Image 1 (tube, rainbow, N blue to C red):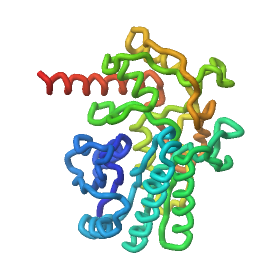
Image 2: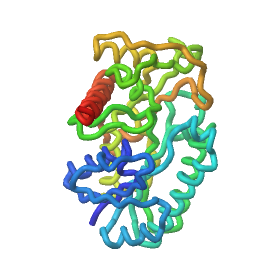
Image 3: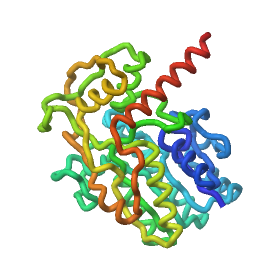
Length: 332
């Protein structure tokens, strides 16, 4: 039997494959390669290039690869882009998740893990944010994921399907062994900062908003290392296999860092100043998002290994140096 990972040629999906293979699991990768890369799919995981909403292909993959469980990462994740192209987000996130769940039910898949987002909370009234906080998304991205969560919960009630919904806050960093990292269009703070730090981008880091109601005026986020996030999904899978009940859990460290604090971490790691400039706030960005991580630690006994902002930043910078070296070698 095998575990199907959707969006497996992307940033988090590739780390999920590594976690599964490192644990001795048989993993199958599915990705349409619209934003992912074949290079991120490790040896040992067959790659099926297909749309996650293609039910006919899914049924064949489930059968041929003897899939028993699905971990679902495929989707669009950029908040600003979702404001510009909301219908694309509802199609790619919500409608494709619906098609995937239909295929799972029709093929008798009984365990499903959905990689969701803290964006479903919108602008929370309280922080840290617990799983009992109201779900009030303020962007099409958050709304599309919230709808997918509801569809999954309804499907589970009607069919023999157990699930874990993991709402992660901000993911960053790269595999400590340098096997995978973030590629593609950079939008996340630590990715962009790492590129600037290694000279891959010749510009200043933009600080989107310096007038938030936070201690230093910049937005605060809970940054979790990508390998810890993958480990949380693996632990959730083990919990379901052991007969654990369906649950919705936050994934975060319960500690927030402001944009300025991240810049300080980059400067500590590199020993050099990181050029930066103040820019206007971006639509859809709440002042702060910090996870209440008590539930995941209690339910899954999840204990992150890389809960250190300097380590997260260092791994991201090392990955960017590797990418920069590869480009230099290719052009030599």
